[in-house]
Image 1 (tube, one colour):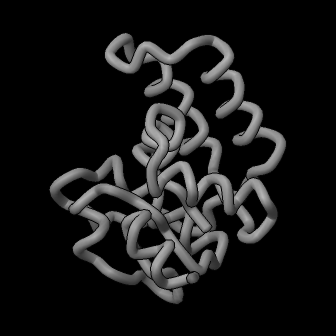
Image 2 (image 1 turned 90 degrees about the horizontal axis):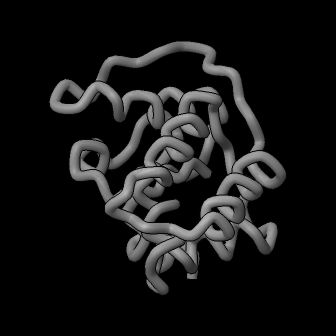
Image 3 (image 1 turned 180 degrees about the horizontal axis):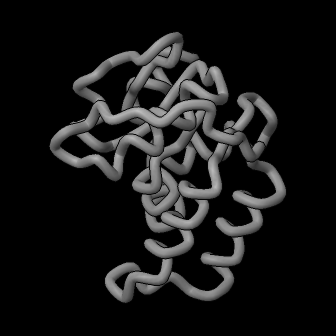
Length: 131
């Protein structure tokens, strides 16, 4: 599965559906896939002052990214999200990893519903789908 940056941020900051999605990845229920571009974005966003994450919180997410996540090399780059081209990196990762799911809170991505075999869901819908 691919997690959008907003899922990592929400999982870290709030005890909700996004945290449960991340817990399921950590328990080994789903393989977590990343690209170097996704890792760089997550690390950059964690530093935004508005989030006020502690160093320990940031280190926890960075550990998940590097130790639990599986790095995939993009096999092809997509240009599908015209409204926000920076979201294309998640579609590229999903196709390259042949991921079953892309979990996001981003409406630009959610509108697509599916790309290849990858279902694009928000955290709540994902948890319903796998329950």
